[in-house]
Length: 135
Image (cartoon, rainbow, N blue to C red; front, side, top):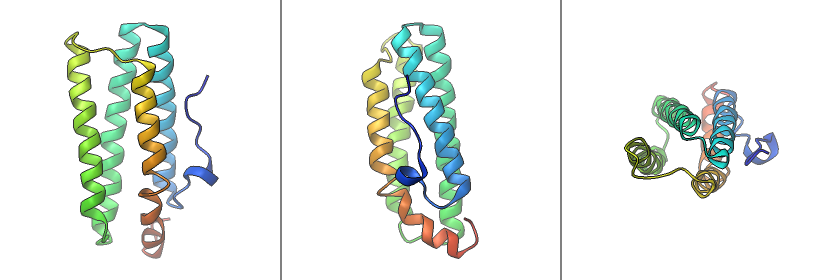
C-alpha cells in the first residue's frame, strides 16, 4: 500500500521537471516504506540508498534552477534541503553500520517533510521559473 501519492492538485509546482522528480521521489519513498514494513534489511538498504541518491539529485536540480533565475528564496530553500540531506546521510551511515534501523516511522517522517515542504516552499518557485521558461 502506498504511503504517499502524488497528485497535481496537492503537489504540482507547475515546473514539469520538478513535478516528475517529485513523482519519482514518492515512488522511491513508497518502495522504502514497503521494504521497511517487510523487515528485509538488504531490500531496505537498497531502497534507502536509491531514495537518498534521488533526493540529493533532485535538490541539486531545484537549486540549479533557482540559481539560474536568481531566485530570492534560494538561501532559505537550500538551508531546508541541506538539513534534510544531513539527517538522511547520518541515518544512512548508521543503518549500513548496523547502528540504526529504518522503520515505517522513518518513512512517515520523510512523508511529513515532503508534505510540508512541497506545497509551501516548492510552490513558491513555480511562478518565477515559469516566467523564465522553465515550466
